[in-house]
Amino acid sequence: MTVPPIPRVAEELLGEHRAIHGRLAQTHNALPATAVKLFALQQRRIVIESIAYVRPAVVQRDEQLLMVPPRAFLHGREERRMMGCTTLFRHLDSRVAMGQLGIVSHDVDRALLAILHALAESSAPTGHARETNPGMFRTALTRWEDQPVNFTHPEADQVAGLVDEALHVANDRDTPACVRAAWLTFTLLSIHPFVDGNGRTSRSTYMAVTGPSLPLGIDWGVLEQWSIWRRGYIVSLQEGQAHGVFDPPKMNALPFIEYTTRTSIAGARVCIDRLEFFARYLQHQIDAGLPEEHAMIRIFIEMWRIATLDELTTCGVAEDRIDEIVSELIGAGIIRWVPRPHSRRTFEHPDEFGLVLA
Image 1 (cartoon, rainbow, N blue to C red):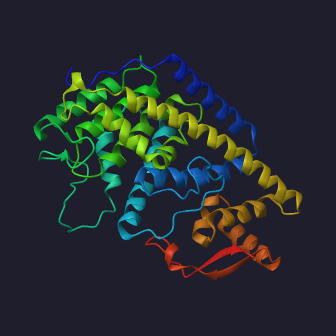
Image 2 (image 1 turned 45 degrees about the horizontal axis):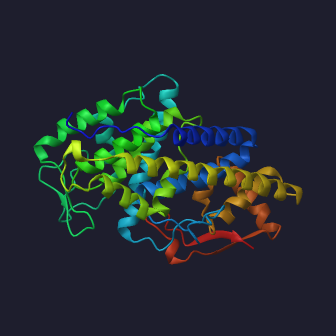
Image 3 (image 1 turned 90 degrees about the vertical axis):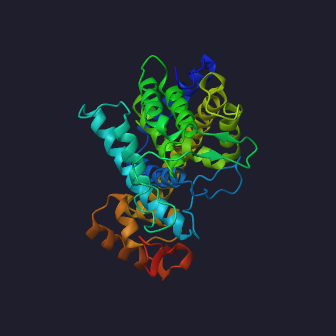
């Protein structure tokens, strides 16, 4: 074998992973559709931020927020990464849906890897000094230097063969999907097949491998935990690369697999808390006299802190109804228009005004 072996993972840890994701699915399926929609809108944004590695908005890592605001003060590079990863997420979402219909295979192949990388890099500025060649493997040697653990990746002419073998191993159904997904992430980060965007591509590949095995078809919480507990992500990766070069028999994926499995468990627990919070908060607004769609729009605006009409269209409410609901909420003194701070204006949403709670 020319790639690192898949290690044995404790059944107790895997059992805890299965149990918490089963509980998450039960909670998800038992709650009102509108509450679930609010949860999904928030988590979708968080997952995209996490794929792009735009640092999450948290108060304290061990006391995570239930209603999480979008990141503000994004610089141009972060905005472009977010734009590319938004398209990437849509592709993954469509792939899961088509896989459930039996239209496409759940296997991860080189074509998918190229697509994910090309989408991640799709909004990168052109003409800059470091050409990333979207969807194409690197042609030069790369290495991590001046790090706690320095690591030299394999030669460029070995990349294609190593990637093909890694994907073949990752598609073996005899190993739990969460283990295969974590192992493939570790291995791709060690091969470093692209000039740039390896982290974004590897994180999204993790989602593609593990999603079909989960009751909800997606791990809503794991990538957020990787962003929040970034040091653990780096340390567990480097622990497996401690030999310093790509030498499969001497590499150990177990620390990274254990880290990803534990963070998946932690993320599922946070998602359960958020689902239950949105259900309670939605019912509170309805009990206070708001119709359900009005309550949803009000909560969405609170969740976004300041929302444009274009952002409100993601709620799934018809646009003419959004205009009507917004007018009624403004008339009732519940929301109001204000100038949007420049910290929230982006390439995609440059609007000068937005809606906030009154």
